Length: 122
Image 1: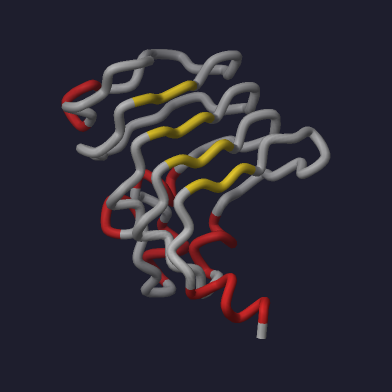
Image 2: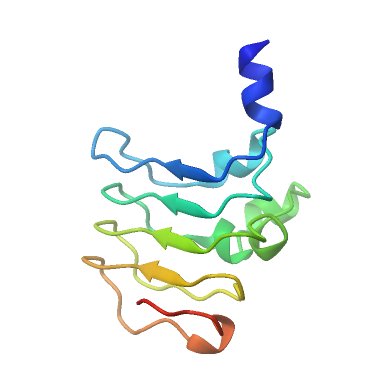
């Protein structure tokens, strides 16, 4: 029962920051029956992520499966840290996001700020 209870509680902070995880995708996080509506901070630094499409709401595979993603799933996210990954781009409409850390990635351009109106730290 403890595992089931963990899934339904409203998580506020999650960290997968470690080279030991070696994550290449976050899609599984959205496919799991976990309540992410109250998530305020997510740290996925030091992994192998190539995109954050599920956070941006643009993951085609999740759309095809009918999975809710993007702003509808991360409606309270204020801090997103994705340092030291393999990201080449990031674009999202996330009005609640205040801090975005994409340092030490392979970005070719800065994220569009129009979708991040409350961003204070980049």
